[in-house]
Length: 171
Image: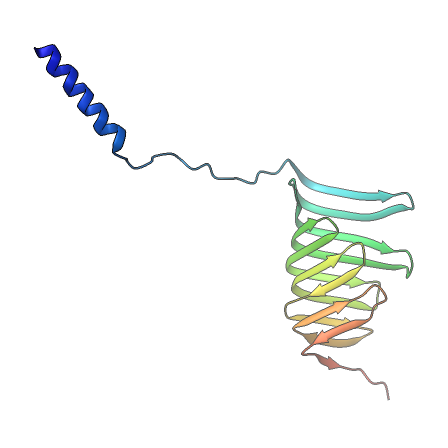
């Protein structure tokens, strides 16, 4: 008799737990982006069949699957057709393909006729296109230029929105 009650009680408890849902306590796995390679005080050189394409000097480099991150970096590249040398300094840079995004204390120079200071800049290493989408101060052929948006193409044509341009006039 006691065995019969025990079996029925076990059966009732089993049916109860089969249809009652409890809080799911499954832990969600967070996707953590971990760098595949880390360099400290690195000098990375990009070489093509024509010669040295670009040089990057950085205090820290993190290489991920989809991007490269550089901290306290200097990026130097040369344009063959115009013989321009572009130098970009930034506290943080992110390289995805041909696009280099620079953040915090960005300084861009093109030979000796152009210098730029901004908080954020975008550089396309394939088309040699520089785009600044934040407030900037620039010196272009010894003339002062500031504004909110600026783009410079490979032939050094400049597009500026909300410009303030101070021209130095020799008398």
